Length: 51
Image (cartoon, rainbow, N blue to C red; front, side):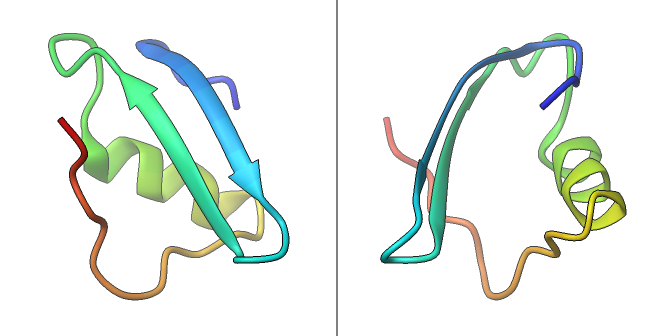
């Protein structure tokens, strides 16, 4: 994924999930969702925040 501020991604193909670590001073959840949708991977449901 090429979004400025995304630090790390991890996908789980069996569970159909992705974990994305990002710097919220450089990007936003909305920008990441837009990029994913544009690449053919729309976000379905509500994202879960992991701290």
